[in-house]
Structure formats: C-alpha cells, structure tokens
Length: 190
Image (cartoon, rainbow, N blue to C red; front, side):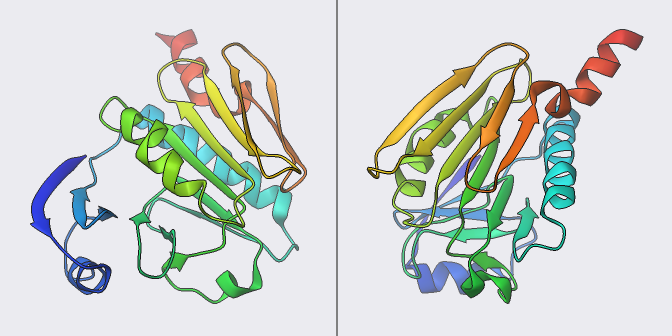
C-alpha cells in the first residue's frame, strides 16, 4: 500500500477516486494506493467467497470481494476489504459502497498486515452492524478472528493449525483446509 501526500475531504476523495485507474483507500484525509496481490492471496479469497456464496444462496445477503468499498460512515474512512458480507437491506441496492456489513475479511500480505491489524481494525470496530472481522495470513496457516459478543465487546481468537472456524453472524463454518486448498495442492506437486 503506497501513501499519496495529497489530503482530501471524503467528498473530494469519492469523486477523485472514480476517475483513477487503481483503487485507493481513505484514512484521516490521506489516500493510499492498493498494491497487487499474490496468487496465494487471491486463491484464499476465491475459496472463501465461493463457499460463502454457496452457503448464502437464497438468503437476502450479498457477498462482495476486492472492488467493493466499505464506508465507516458517509463522511469518514473508506476501505477495500478482500471480502465483505452484508445482510442489511440498506446495502442490497448499493452499487459500490457497503455501509452495514456483518462480516469483513482481510487476507494479510507483507505490505498491508500492519494496517489491517491496526488502523483498519480500529475503524472497522466502529461499524455498529459488524459482528466479525477475520484476518487470514496468505503464507502460513494463521487465522485471527475478532468477534463482537452480546455485551458489545470484541474478543479475539487465533488459529495456527488445521482447524474449523465458526462465523456466528451467518451461521457458517469453514476449515483452514478450505481456505488453503490451492496452497496445499501446490505443495504436494512441488
């Protein structure tokens, strides 16, 4: 992720970014260009989105990836998570910004992991509809799950070996084998 030195208001950013050839995230008036991802990163996203779409078929939820912007509020921070899921009717008709997600997933890369664990975690936790924030390491089996409990407190659990993870917000369970499927198959053939 590369930082641009120009500061903008949220309105200026939204208008400016529509004209750009790459995606930019917006944090505290500063814009950050998005970096290209690895095959490993993309395979994890595809594996998860495919499983989520299948699980949610026929339900009034939408699963989006990569090119869908999440707004912390209409005049605040804007991010492009790797996976975002919303079951809120206010997001169903949205064309490019989700404001009421229940689940956000970031697949970590060396250039973004500090931001994903820091500023993004802080900002995402401000979204009242968000129930779960998942960080997935793209190189090693490691999944960090941040979940909002019934007392509105965030609790985290880290999985560092083959395991299954339950997402209560959508009653969905996935395994580390599902996420890292292509990576494991590649190791067998190398």
